Image (tube, rainbow, N blue to C red; front, side, top):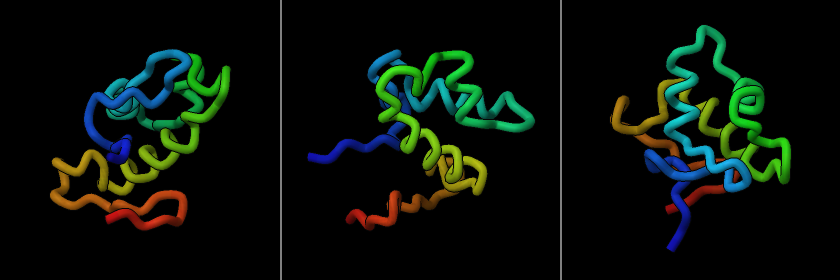
Length: 85
């Protein structure tokens, strides 16, 4: 079983209990969405920082209209240069 960090409501930042939905809500309200804003509001990345690459991937996909997948009908399953079936 794999962890799907794109699934709505998935907790990405375990240190501060922040979900991808919280990030999505913030980015939708912002004129210039950034991962740094997540750090400012929710402290993401201030402890272990393991969540930052996942949030960066989601933000790139959000800006391209690829995430969340339900809004565009397609989902790119590549991240960090890897391909997943």
